[in-house]
Length: 165
Image (cartoon, rainbow, N blue to C red):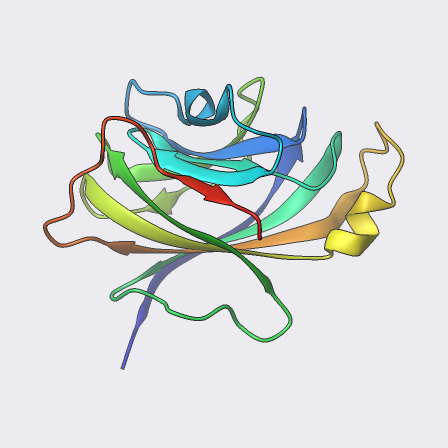
């Protein structure tokens, strides 16, 4: 049976249709993982954290970050699966960050640095796609990011890309 070890629920400012789950203590910026991606790419992982492309821009997404003791296989009912990604941290804390590095309140304690896997899901996609640009609406789009420690997994030099089907 799997156990939830830590949980953080927070808002993050989505700018340019993107935000990151950032290794707060590390020198590598997760934002660079998605800098030149195809517009259909929604998720990239690598050294420094996760880069996520939202379905709209200039709004505040509600994000739930969860740390689990084992991998989580299936998106919960009511959530649309975006994909899975591996990432590496130099530190032991994760924070949500906007494109311009506005950090969301709170942090997720990982215990120690290392290699992690993540399963990313979204809810509210249809509602957020209907927003006007620069609405700065709060919580219309919701993200569930479930994280676990990888055993013996190394991060590739070029992050894997996860395309939306």
